[in-house]
Image 1 (spheres, rainbow, N blue to C red):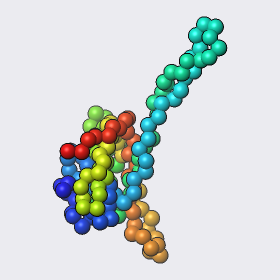
Image 2 (image 1 turned 120 degrees about the vertical axis):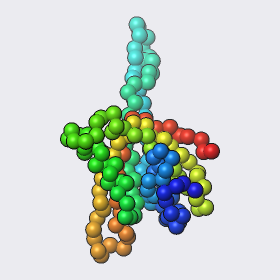
Image 3 (image 1 turned 60 degrees about the vertical axis):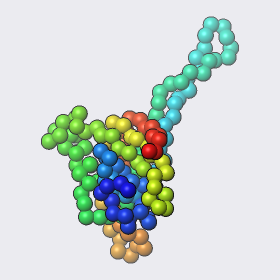
Length: 154
């Protein structure tokens, strides 16, 4: 069982954000991880049919949403980004982190693990504070990263 997240969270929170092997937050929703490669049609000589070549790689950011809790982990990840952007505190090499997004099954076992490299928290939301809403207030964290890979579960 990942350290740092109480077992009772596993009933609702099926995605875990890990950093340094420690679960930092449990999430109810996670947007898709997506990478793509642009196509470049390259023509040579008098050949009327272009050769397809891979071009620029695009990577989307991921948005993680979870129920509010008493720790400051998500906020502190974003504050680190703000400190670097404003020149206060952290220096740029300390900004980029490696995170794992882990999908869990019903018994808390790992189903899939994706590793996000050179990541930073790009946006933080404390959630919509609507007392008439049916759902619990959700914190959101938007993570920008350079690339990801699927990691085999141990």
